[in-house]
Amino acid sequence: MKRSIFKQMQQVVLPFLLCISISLFAGACNKAPKETNKKAEVPNVILIMADDMGWGDTGYNGNTLIKTPALDQMALEGIQFNRFYSASAVCSPTRASVLTGRNPFRTGIFTANAGILRPEEVTLPELLKEQGYNTGHFGKWHLGTLTDTEKDANRGRVGNIKEYNPPALHGYDAAFVTESKVPTYDPMKKPKGRHIQAGWDCLKEGEDFVPYGTYYWDIEGSKVTENLDGDDSRVIMDRVLPFIDQSLNEGNPFFSVIWFHTPHMPCVAGPRHQEMYKEQDVLTRNYAGCITAMDEQIGRLRNFLKEKGVDSNTMIWFCSDNGPEHTNPGSAGPYLERKRSLHEGGVRVPGLLVWPGKIQHAFETDIPCVTSDYLPTITDVLQIEKDKTPYQLDGISLLPLIEGKMKQRNEAIGFCFDNQVSYSDDTFKLYARQGEFVMYNIAVDPSEANPIENGGKEMNRLKEEFMVFLESCQNSFKGKEYGTQSYDKLEQKWKNPLKKKKK
Image 1 (spheres, one colour):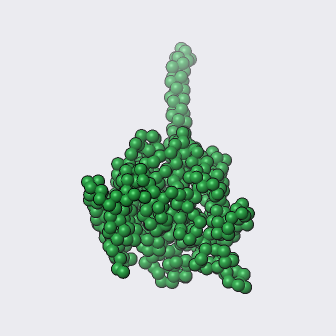
Image 2 (image 1 turned 180 degrees about the vertical axis):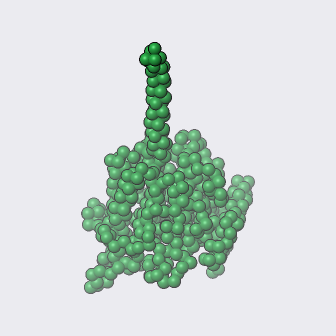
Image 3 (image 1 turned 90 degrees about the vertical axis):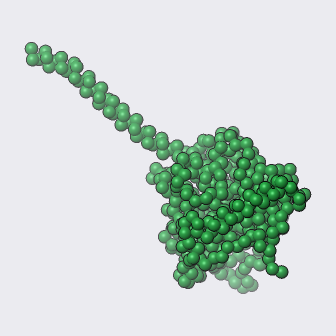
């Protein structure tokens, strides 16, 4: 009898317990992949920037001389931005806009080698680090000094504490950076020969080796001394790939900022890349050669991501920090003027985005976009709460554009540099030098050949909007959002871009 009861209990209870066990086991199994998948769906982010590269210096924008097959392939696979702008006409301000989503006049980076990326600013690496990303910065920094104990580059010197501002203070886990420019081949050495652009130090007669005077530093603030010879773009990429590999091994998404020095002067190409352009004059051989060398490293990066199986889930942005330098052979394409100008040739730059898992059909867009759009776009993609970016942003999210849902920008882009301003919407561009305003219909006159001096209601509207924007920038600069600690420390004064220069 007892055995019969026990047998009945076995028939009822054991299946029940087995069912619970299977359910619990299945739940546990389902839970782990769910977390893994969630992590896998978070895109890796790479921001690549060239230095002083003109809109017309790429094959996909019509250059028939300079070989840029990797960039051309990106244009075929992703989004080609025909109206992509650097936030300024020189380097440091544009770089600040990339990391903050804000116009550089808000943060006191009015020009190159002036101001710092203020510690109070909320930056992309800080935001992404909070989301579990490994964060790394490679190449040019130019947002403050990297040492206050010795002479280095433009501003690094003994006792210059107020401008000491390395990447470690802004959310980065890894860094391999110089304060500012270096030769684009053998970056730690003065270039050889008189063929380098006028005004740049070269080895003199009889000299064999002289340090250039700028150093590479790591995240700990130590000088890097190994593997610094040859093409500078390759030297940089040799640090990027191990950082990505480590991130993948740790199971973390990565945020990698790659700011090449190419093709900023002094432009130097190695023997192999000069040979590719041997029919050209010496300046062009060096200029074109170093761009092709950089392009090869971008191709190397993309191949590495494919080998690791993460290319589909990685967004790669590419642009330049401003238009081409006046004394090099770079091309602004059909656009007016060059670096240091807020005419189109100074700020309209090559712009690309590839993200194979999201952008499966390549397209071009004429919607105006700007480097300040990076931060709001990436935070929108990651669904980061708005209160994480509490300060006034000047960029907008381009996620609707990426998804094919944006038809126009609707918000104008403001620019300030030196004694110039401009304010561009989808159709019109307001421009002033020393307070003298003109307007262009930039949609039909992108080369700015026909200024409209009396623009009527449209011109008045843009002026009014611009003045509101400029006042907002001045308020931010003076500490309205986060106080005056950096303002006081740096002892900066507001630079009114509408002020006329004294003769």
